[in-house]
Length: 205
Image 1 (cartoon, rainbow, N blue to C red):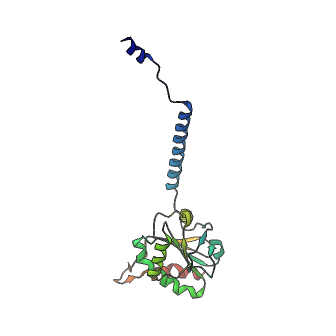
Image 2 (tube, rainbow, N blue to C red; image 1 turned 180 degrees about the vertical axis):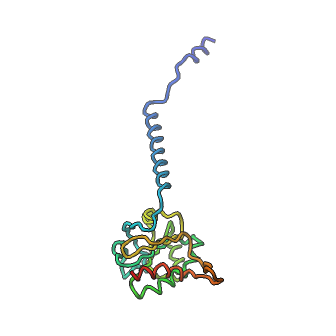
Image 3 (cartoon, rainbow, N blue to C red; image 1 turned 30 degrees about the vertical axis):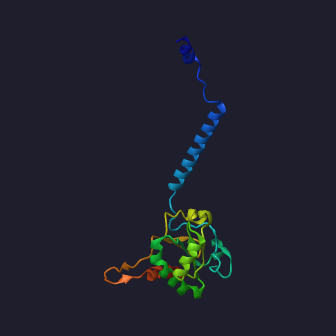
């Protein structure tokens, strides 16, 4: 009995100080990460009228712009720039692929409009297969480390941003361009027509 009492009376050893410091440091680090993530999710997407900061897009081989391996938005000042975020795994992206390519073909000869495809969270083999499948020829490249998508604060894909000659955002398309009913008519406004309706007024400036 006395032996049992002596065991119960023995002081319990606490956690070493250095272990406590490591645990607290880990908890503080986790809280910082969570706070950063929460702040990031609360950021408001860029809106029309905003001047878009320059970014650099490195192109896939075979999808360069005027023979350049990469380009910065600042290099395209004076041109209308259409930035389309897409991915090979994105089914809605397939709905607008043909329309984007057709619009690019229409504006390419004039040299006043540039389309940039930004491949989001993808792998190059799948991305290239997608581009080949839909006959895409306009400049395209991967969003390395999601830097460009973070700049635009996209919510998903597809999303398309129209930037005027002064670098200001003038229109945002969330989701794919699809045929839409024409007001007061049973006819449909096709995706390519919708794209042209956004770009043409900018070329008149």
